[in-house]
Amino acid sequence: MTIHVVQTGETLSTIAEQYGVTPERLIIDNELPNPDNLVVGQSMVVRIPTEVHTVVEGDTIEGVAGTYDITTDQLLRNNPWAAAQEFLEPGQTLLIDYEKDPAIDTALIIGYLYPFIDRSVHRKTLPFLTYQSLFTYGFTPQGELVPIDDGELIATGYDAGVPPIMVLAPMNAEMNFDTQIAHDMFVNTEGQRLLIENIIATMQEKGYVGLDIDFEFIRPEDKELFIGFISNVKNSLEPLGLLTLVALAPKTSGEMTGLLYEAHDYPAIGAIADLVLLMTYEWGYLFSSPMPTAPLNNVRQVLEYGVSVIDNDKILMGIPNYCYDWALPFIRGESMAEALSNQEAIARAVQYNATIEFDETAQVPFYYYTNEAGVEHVVWFDDARSMNAKLRLIPELQLRGGGIWQVMNFFPGLYMVLNELFTIEEG
Image (cartoon, rainbow, N blue to C red; front, side, top):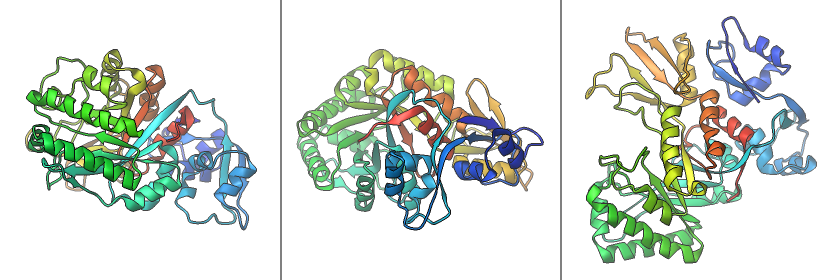
């Protein structure tokens, strides 16, 4: 795998010729939204095939994988488009193998999704996941679960060998984190007991293999109550062979203050949970000043603190799969960014004939443009280069893997880098 950055004057044909591949290979692998109008600074992954298969009548994914002695998952990771199709069509070309270095590590990869995910995106993503985390079950302080429509997604996941993890979050009717709901459950001993019973009953009924506790903005004075709840969950799930995972705010020390951080005690929670997701994203967010969602230097600081107080084999790095567009000038308290997918960011750069730049410290691309109304904008996004830089922290720090927030849009650059670097752990 090579990551090529488009230079002035280059076209898809000249880039393909440089690497000895077809333009169609670059289009398919990268799902290029702009094959006829590349943007200077745009990155694309180049995979040089060493073996391909041309589909004939009657071919199936399982049959082709068996012919070449590879797993169906590996075949689908090489050809995600095929997972979105019901049948293979004669004449289609499947990439069996390509020039690459051996995987440098095994990684556990979780993908977070909402029930309304596009089903073709879901099927394309599953081969890259160990578990799928369905967002999100809510609850009442009295112990009732607020369910989601998850049956179809669970069944599809199991068909692909990807078991589900239930996400539990204290959210109100507007789907915002609610500090009061969490507090009221913490102090209601009977309600907490019933909640855990209802969680277990639902997990066993639907086939969930673990619980992801995503409690954000917990009152600092509730820290010990929160730790106690995690301990109660773990003590109840562990005898049943069920996992306990906790999502943690991105801290760089144990002294950080503020509602997002203080109740998230890395050493205490890390000692209890089977896995922790360090949410290494959202430095740039809807209401922030323009900046990268997950700058490499910030991500590294959080992970280095994490491994200093938590067993690194329990740690998952948060992987962002979204980006933001800000109108300028930014006015704090008034400005609000627009959320985009990384593929949409490329399409927008094409629309406004932008030149993509790259921040070497943050290891993240960005560009400026001026819209039809004369308003200047800046877009910070991710590409294969930035994902390659971030994902290499997993083996460097000997982490267990990563958690993708979220998999609602398919991001070819991310998944080709995952496929290059890691053997995906099976669920």
